Length: 235
Image (cartoon, rainbow, N blue to C red; front, side):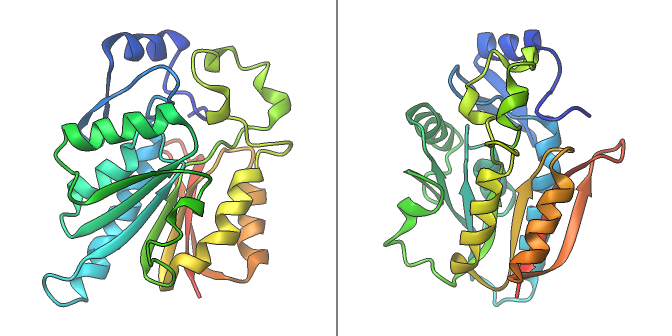
């Protein structure tokens, strides 16, 4: 499966035309200026849901799990987690006005406003003051991860905002920061879930291993065997 490519640019344009896309069984609003949710991102969602349900099974009834979703885009991951795990409280962040606005609209439309809070800012920065340090069970990040120099050759991506794809010189600029900054929020044993591109997978694994903040690294593959996401446990 190609990275960040649910089909042709025509399919993306069609989704924008409909104003809707399906993700994890949810009917989500989509709009120009925001990445259309990709089917392969469901790998990340399912793994996070399974982990959170395992955590809840070991806790007293009525206790919540805390989830942070950075680079939330349309809010597809945040909404999918909240819909599938009723005991999850979710904090979602994104940098751009269109993403924050669309996520808030999806949260309202799906009736998740009581459990999904949306903030605008750079990665974890807007969460200062939310009293989350060391208390988060799962951090999710679907970052831009295509190297800048490759973007001009990707005609299939021209319909969507460049900032949703541009991962810096090596495609790892945002991934690196997400990995480095997540341990402050994660409780011991909490997990970081990150989507990565097939070209960047090996380097992302090296970043996880070199950080010495994580263990139990798991790679998530598409049906064709392509690594498309990973998750690891905070030491």
